[in-house]
Amino acid sequence: MTDFIPKDPDFRARVEEDFAKQNLMQTIGAELALIEPGRAEIVMAKRDDLCQQHGFLHAGITTTLADTAAGYAAFSLMPKGAEVLSTEFKINLLNPAEGKRFSARAEVLKSGRTLSVVRSDVWAEDETGRWSMIASMLASMICLMPK
Image (cartoon, rainbow, N blue to C red):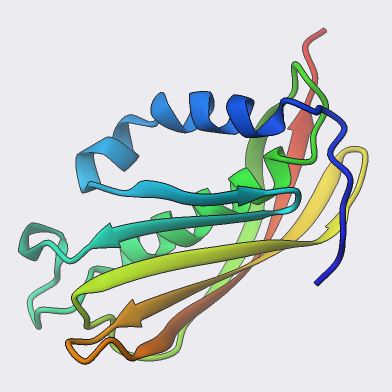
């Protein structure tokens, strides 16, 4: 793990405030479980209305969790007043998304002035408490500063 120093000492409050504005996260019942410099984790319980026809969490929801965690990991290192947007990502769906709970854990690999590269892995917890990786994303996030 890389030790990053946030540009904004109040990054945690800024991330939490921004996450609270995410209507989609509220809609799917996701919660911000961890925010540290360059790291974020988002968790959610399984919901049948977010699953596809085979009972697995829909790939769109898996991708949403990974992308959002990646964005907040990058955002935690950005200066006050910055906004974050995804510019590119690739996701590998490694295993069927089955479980009772899901966790997207993101870590910044490279924090640049404009672009950051983030890895975000999504994990599923089964009924016995065992976690398995179901997806891995590599994403680029852009830092937008007000004009």
